Length: 150
Image (cartoon, rainbow, N blue to C red; front, side):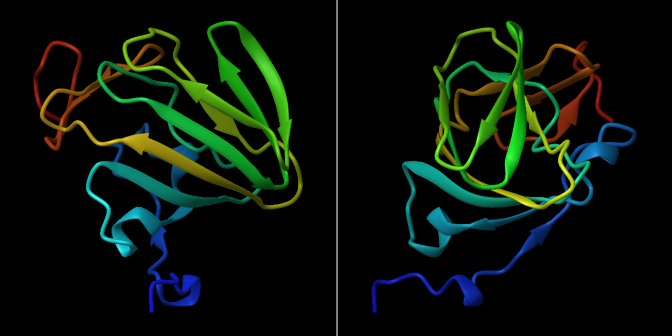
């Protein structure tokens, strides 16, 4: 069977961010649907954000495109341009190399679900976090902006 059984795809809780940057993302969970399908050129994640959770720290990628579609609920998109409310059916994309830090926050009182799709360029990509002392290169471990490890 080619159809992905969502019930069989493991829920991955929390985040890999080092403390204290992990706190707003601790309660999120995701299912790696792209991995479940055996995809290698782009990732697809179904992410669940309970009230108060963030999708990530605000970030931008040097070499990875990102696309997000809100499946259910209401989220607040925060970018360098400000804030926008996103509801089920709304979508947004972020082009690789554009220095526009972005993330989503669930400020509502209900769970929100989003589909996040991104290219996989671990050999080239550097993820930068403009609000915090964090940098993540490829499949490596997070570092401080000056390159020292956490």
